[in-house]
Image (cartoon, rainbow, N blue to C red; front, side, top):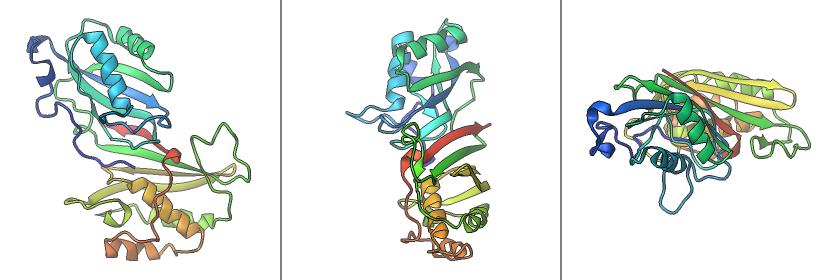
Length: 267
């Protein structure tokens, strides 16, 4: 999953990367981005690895002649997809939004698409301005998985107690310490989950969750916990005990990255 934390960006002083430019000409831009995360080492730029942030920043640098640092609404892990990732940056550019959109997509690989470019208020920050984020996780339960699905769903062709899983999903709608459903230690592990819903249709389970923030691997761990419920290894009411324990257990494994999507960021 993702951990909501500051990226390596110009946050706090977004224009510093373009300090040689006239600050009065610097504008703030917002990108809405869609990508297939299969071939990438996640969103965040990493030395020696191909990441989505690095590819977009490099394309922006070619177009503007400036060192660009993107701030994303959420940092997705390797293999995680996005339908509506949001990123912001400061730059000096005379290009129209439509021109910048076409130029970026011409430079980027086809599994990364900029869906929208917009000039926004100077105080807009993709991460800090966000009210909530919506993630979706797809589980395919068919006996045979289509070759057109294997990159985008978790295939689980075994019996599941779907009714119990649906009940358990609602147990995560709360403001609480989510340490038991994450990887690592956090000084501030409380998150507010507004919606947590599991729906079944056409041999597929779709889990949708909206929260004001997420700990690392939080969504994938919640999905793993729901699968334990579906396998009758854990009763829905047992989730309360996991919250109280505030510790990761074998009842909360991490589901694979390929079934997870960042769907939308709410501002």
